[in-house]
Image 1 (cartoon, protein in one colour):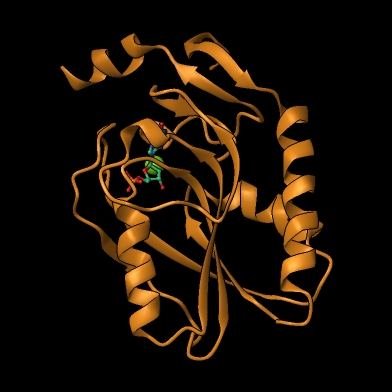
Image 2 (tube, helix red, strand yellow; image 1 turned 90 degrees about the vertical axis):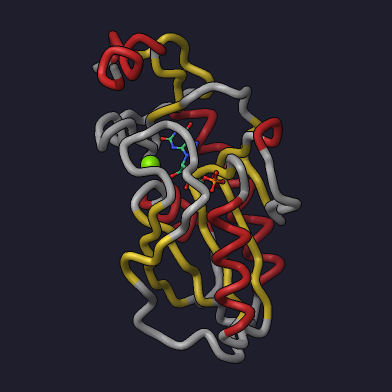
Length: 182
Ligand code: XMP
Ligand code: MG
Protein backbone atom coordinates (compact mmCIF):
# COMPACT_ATOMS: atom_id res chain seq x y z
CA UNK A 1 0.00 0.00 0.00
CA UNK A 2 2.84 2.41 0.92
CA UNK A 3 4.45 1.58 -2.45
CA UNK A 4 1.60 3.38 -4.21
CA UNK A 5 2.50 6.68 -2.50
CA UNK A 6 4.74 9.09 -4.40
CA UNK A 7 5.35 11.53 -1.54
CA UNK A 8 4.19 12.00 2.04
CA UNK A 9 2.98 15.60 2.43
CA UNK A 10 2.19 15.62 6.17
CA UNK A 11 3.00 12.97 8.72
CA UNK A 12 0.60 11.54 11.27
CA UNK A 13 2.30 13.60 13.98
CA UNK A 14 2.00 16.86 12.01
CA UNK A 15 -1.68 16.15 11.41
CA UNK A 16 -2.34 15.38 15.09
CA UNK A 17 -0.69 18.63 16.17
CA UNK A 18 -2.80 20.59 13.69
CA UNK A 19 -5.99 18.88 14.87
CA UNK A 20 -5.18 19.90 18.46
CA UNK A 21 -4.74 23.53 17.35
CA UNK A 22 -8.05 23.47 15.49
CA UNK A 23 -9.73 21.91 18.52
CA UNK A 24 -8.51 24.73 20.74
CA UNK A 25 -9.85 27.38 18.37
CA UNK A 26 -13.19 25.61 18.07
CA UNK A 27 -13.47 25.11 21.84
CA UNK A 28 -13.07 28.85 22.28
CA UNK A 29 -15.47 29.80 19.46
CA UNK A 30 -18.24 27.27 20.23
CA UNK A 31 -18.21 27.51 24.04
CA UNK A 32 -21.81 27.45 25.32
CA UNK A 33 -23.36 27.06 21.84
CA UNK A 34 -23.91 23.27 21.85
CA UNK A 35 -23.04 22.96 18.14
CA UNK A 36 -24.29 20.19 15.89
CA UNK A 37 -21.07 18.80 14.42
CA UNK A 38 -21.69 17.16 11.05
CA UNK A 39 -19.22 14.67 9.62
CA UNK A 40 -19.26 14.42 5.84
CA UNK A 41 -18.85 10.71 5.10
CA UNK A 42 -16.85 8.90 4.29
CA UNK A 43 -13.68 10.95 3.90
CA UNK A 44 -14.01 13.01 7.09
CA UNK A 45 -14.53 10.10 9.50
CA UNK A 46 -10.99 10.02 10.88
CA UNK A 47 -10.67 13.80 11.14
CA UNK A 48 -14.07 13.97 12.85
CA UNK A 49 -13.10 11.37 15.46
CA UNK A 50 -9.77 13.07 16.19
CA UNK A 51 -11.24 16.58 16.19
CA UNK A 52 -14.19 16.11 18.53
CA UNK A 53 -11.84 14.71 21.19
CA UNK A 54 -10.04 18.08 21.10
CA UNK A 55 -13.18 20.21 21.35
CA UNK A 56 -13.65 20.69 25.09
CA UNK A 57 -17.21 22.00 25.19
CA UNK A 58 -20.56 20.18 24.89
CA UNK A 59 -21.61 19.31 21.33
CA UNK A 60 -23.73 16.85 19.39
CA UNK A 61 -22.71 14.88 16.32
CA UNK A 62 -24.44 13.64 13.21
CA UNK A 63 -23.41 12.24 9.84
CA UNK A 64 -24.20 12.98 6.26
CA UNK A 65 -23.04 11.13 3.16
CA UNK A 66 -22.85 12.83 -0.20
CA UNK A 67 -21.43 11.79 -3.52
CA UNK A 68 -19.84 13.92 -6.17
CA UNK A 69 -16.92 11.88 -7.39
CA UNK A 70 -17.81 8.23 -7.98
CA UNK A 71 -14.73 6.23 -8.90
CA UNK A 72 -13.11 9.11 -10.75
CA UNK A 73 -10.56 11.58 -9.39
CA UNK A 74 -12.45 14.62 -10.76
CA UNK A 75 -15.67 16.23 -9.55
CA UNK A 76 -18.71 15.55 -11.70
CA UNK A 77 -20.35 18.72 -10.35
CA UNK A 78 -23.34 16.65 -9.31
CA UNK A 79 -23.93 16.40 -5.56
CA UNK A 80 -26.31 13.79 -4.20
CA UNK A 81 -27.32 13.24 -0.56
CA UNK A 82 -26.92 9.52 0.05
CA UNK A 83 -27.46 9.62 3.81
CA UNK A 84 -29.21 12.57 5.39
CA UNK A 85 -29.01 13.87 8.97
CA UNK A 86 -31.03 12.18 11.72
CA UNK A 87 -31.81 15.46 13.49
CA UNK A 88 -33.13 18.88 12.53
CA UNK A 89 -30.67 21.76 12.09
CA UNK A 90 -33.32 24.41 12.67
CA UNK A 91 -31.99 27.08 15.01
CA UNK A 92 -28.71 25.18 15.53
CA UNK A 93 -25.12 26.33 15.23
CA UNK A 94 -23.81 23.81 12.72
CA UNK A 95 -20.16 22.88 12.26
CA UNK A 96 -19.45 20.97 9.03
CA UNK A 97 -16.38 18.72 9.27
CA UNK A 98 -14.88 18.00 5.85
CA UNK A 99 -11.80 16.13 4.69
CA UNK A 100 -10.80 18.23 1.70
CA UNK A 101 -12.16 21.16 -0.29
CA UNK A 102 -11.34 20.88 -3.95
CA UNK A 103 -13.69 22.57 -6.45
CA UNK A 104 -15.88 23.66 -3.52
CA UNK A 105 -19.02 22.32 -5.22
CA UNK A 106 -19.90 19.77 -2.53
CA UNK A 107 -19.75 22.24 0.33
CA UNK A 108 -21.41 25.14 -1.44
CA UNK A 109 -24.32 22.82 -2.14
CA UNK A 110 -24.42 21.57 1.47
CA UNK A 111 -24.18 25.04 3.02
CA UNK A 112 -27.12 26.03 0.86
CA UNK A 113 -29.16 23.01 1.98
CA UNK A 114 -28.46 23.66 5.68
CA UNK A 115 -29.29 27.36 5.38
CA UNK A 116 -32.57 26.56 3.65
CA UNK A 117 -33.33 24.25 6.60
CA UNK A 118 -32.89 27.30 8.85
CA UNK A 119 -29.66 26.51 10.64
CA UNK A 120 -28.77 29.44 12.90
CA UNK A 121 -25.20 29.45 11.60
CA UNK A 122 -23.10 27.24 9.32
CA UNK A 123 -19.34 27.01 9.93
CA UNK A 124 -16.87 24.90 7.94
CA UNK A 125 -13.74 23.17 9.21
CA UNK A 126 -11.62 21.18 6.76
CA UNK A 127 -8.35 19.42 7.44
CA UNK A 128 -7.11 19.84 3.84
CA UNK A 129 -7.66 22.51 1.22
CA UNK A 130 -6.75 22.64 -2.48
CA UNK A 131 -7.52 26.31 -3.27
CA UNK A 132 -5.93 26.12 -6.74
CA UNK A 133 -8.83 24.00 -7.95
CA UNK A 134 -11.74 26.10 -6.69
CA UNK A 135 -14.54 26.74 -9.19
CA UNK A 136 -16.98 28.39 -6.76
CA UNK A 137 -16.39 31.12 -4.18
CA UNK A 138 -16.27 29.04 -1.03
CA UNK A 139 -13.76 29.17 1.82
CA UNK A 140 -13.48 27.17 5.02
CA UNK A 141 -13.71 29.12 8.27
CA UNK A 142 -11.00 26.86 9.75
CA UNK A 143 -8.48 24.84 7.77
CA UNK A 144 -5.59 22.54 8.53
CA UNK A 145 -3.23 22.32 5.54
CA UNK A 146 -3.15 23.85 2.09
CA UNK A 147 -2.22 21.17 -0.44
CA UNK A 148 -0.82 21.33 -3.97
CA UNK A 149 -2.98 20.34 -6.93
CA UNK A 150 -2.41 16.60 -6.76
CA UNK A 151 -4.63 13.65 -5.93
CA UNK A 152 -4.01 12.75 -2.32
CA UNK A 153 -4.94 9.79 -0.13
CA UNK A 154 -4.72 8.78 3.51
CA UNK A 155 -6.14 10.14 6.78
CA UNK A 156 -9.63 9.17 5.62
CA UNK A 157 -9.22 10.02 1.94
CA UNK A 158 -9.47 7.27 -0.63
CA UNK A 159 -8.89 6.27 -4.16
CA UNK A 160 -11.58 3.73 -5.14
CA UNK A 161 -12.22 3.14 -1.39
CA UNK A 162 -8.60 2.22 -0.64
CA UNK A 163 -5.88 3.98 1.38
CA UNK A 164 -8.26 5.59 3.93
CA UNK A 165 -6.39 3.87 6.77
CA UNK A 166 -2.99 5.45 6.04
CA UNK A 167 -2.24 7.68 9.07
CA UNK A 168 -0.53 10.35 6.92
CA UNK A 169 -1.58 12.33 3.83
CA UNK A 170 0.33 11.58 0.65
CA UNK A 171 0.26 11.98 -3.09
CA UNK A 172 -0.90 8.87 -4.92
CA UNK A 173 1.38 7.79 -7.77
CA UNK A 174 -0.46 8.80 -10.97
CA UNK A 175 0.19 5.39 -12.50
CA UNK A 176 -2.07 3.84 -9.85
CA UNK A 177 -5.20 5.57 -11.17
CA UNK A 178 -4.07 5.94 -14.79
CA UNK A 179 -3.72 2.16 -14.95
CA UNK A 180 -7.22 1.56 -13.60
CA UNK A 181 -8.97 4.27 -15.63
CA UNK A 182 -7.82 2.94 -18.99
P1 XMP B 1 -15.28 19.34 -4.16
O1 XMP B 1 -14.65 19.37 -5.54
O2 XMP B 1 -16.76 19.27 -4.25
O3 XMP B 1 -14.79 17.96 -3.62
O4 XMP B 1 -14.76 20.44 -3.29
C1 XMP B 1 -14.79 17.62 -2.30
C2 XMP B 1 -14.76 16.13 -2.17
O5 XMP B 1 -13.96 15.54 -3.20
C3 XMP B 1 -13.15 14.52 -2.73
N1 XMP B 1 -11.76 14.83 -3.07
C4 XMP B 1 -10.71 14.02 -2.92
N2 XMP B 1 -10.64 12.79 -2.40
N3 XMP B 1 -8.31 12.79 -2.77
C5 XMP B 1 -9.43 12.17 -2.35
O6 XMP B 1 -9.35 11.06 -1.87
C6 XMP B 1 -8.29 14.02 -3.30
O7 XMP B 1 -7.23 14.54 -3.68
C7 XMP B 1 -9.57 14.68 -3.37
N4 XMP B 1 -9.94 15.89 -3.82
C8 XMP B 1 -11.28 15.95 -3.62
C9 XMP B 1 -13.39 14.46 -1.24
O8 XMP B 1 -14.22 13.36 -0.97
C10 XMP B 1 -14.12 15.73 -0.88
O9 XMP B 1 -15.11 15.54 0.10
MG1 MG C 1 -13.69 10.16 -1.93
